[in-house]
Length: 259
Ligand code: ACO
Image (cartoon, rainbow, N blue to C red; front, top):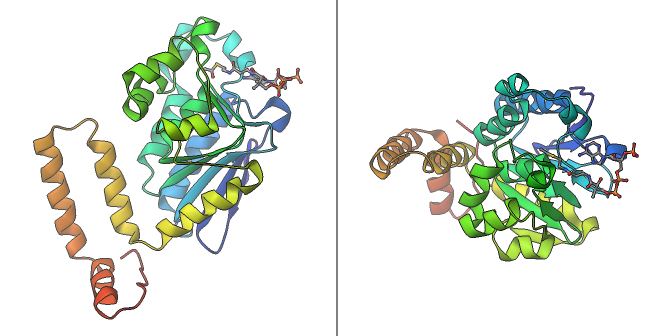
């Protein structure tokens, strides 16, 4: 798989490492980069060799420094009707495989929005999360006004969006924006450990649980509980469920096939 803006490395452990590869521009995202991101996650969603994705930025100076401000300069209202950034981040959210953002330094604007569309954020100690858009006369346009408040609460989201206040790696953990904060050189190791822990669990169960958790944000409790019960029933018919229960009873580690 070859992209202009990314490096892709899929290991035998089923962990796909996707690296935004434009370090000289602090990994700022062009329209093409958003399209490639969407393409990658559509592929990863279906690829049997991928169980988990880690997304990071090349170099040690930025995760993603936002949308490319050069391409933003000429943006007209009609161009926004097809929002490549929103569409790509929705694809991450809908990807059945869990996605971990390994945030190595600046996650600004669209970079912060990318991180919050992932299932987990692991931050380096020098990470900085910020949504500076209102200072540029625009607003976060890739889900930032919607996803952030659900993650850290309305007050803190307003602090970041309206005041443009930045959040460091350690603070991100305190406010629930990140699950862990580690020295930069340990970041990928930490993300890989998280991924490895999830890879030991039932893959179909993980996929179902991710979809249900996402759906819980927009469905009523009645409908959500019904969907949960239907998904539970579907899982009861899988080899994975038999293997999970039998391995417990036989006091051994499970070997899941995703079937
Ligand atoms: N778009 C386009 N180019 C960028 C961006 C960006 N978002 N961010 C950095 N660059 C480019 C710079 O123009 C510079 O290019 P040059 O070497 O050709 O002059 C290069 O990347 C390095 O940038 P520096 O500012 O020199 O790097 P530094 O490490 O000192 O600072 C930082 C990094 C803090 C991320 C800074 O570049 C910055 O503030 N960038 C803009 C961040 C921003 O406002 N993002 C939100 C965009 S709006 C949105 O996402 C919807």
